[in-house]
Length: 195
Image 1: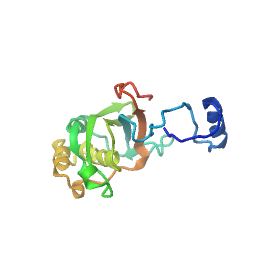
Image 2: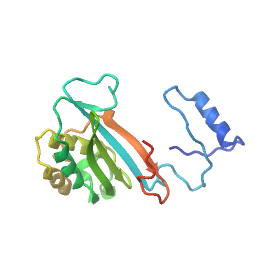
Image 3: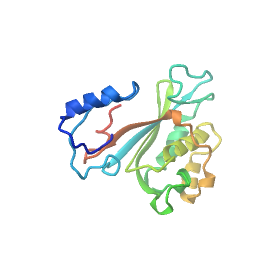
Image 4: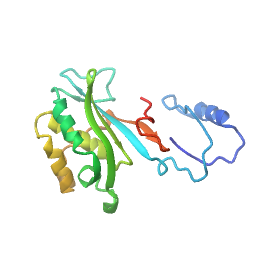
């Protein structure tokens, strides 16, 4: 989602066509609509939903290369799910965010954090009112430690409560992260999901 002011007279359909004619082939505008002048694509959002995808098998991905984090060992999804449940609620996310985030703005409400096996993938689904820089990938890295059996499920809650970035393990690669939905109105975040 983006927003911009446009002083011209083209309607939404013509603006969409004009943008798509100029964008590179891997970027496309699906919808264009008029918005109130006080709308902001980032600050008007009520909820955001991300998915982080792991592929836990010995053989590296081919078609899914760049869309998941390949881990050679099978992950313990139940342990990861247990650990993720402890992240739901209002917390200070200092342990799981980039050091460049202002210290006073690190509190966010996590509405959902779940880990499930989806076919050949293990998916982390998180939904919150907002995320800090590096937060989802840092959580994904910590959950991988639990899934590999290197840490117990309760460890995630312990390092979250410590509010110390030095305690977080390796941040997961960007390749597995997908923004799934942004919800701007009073609908449930589940209603805003588009796949």
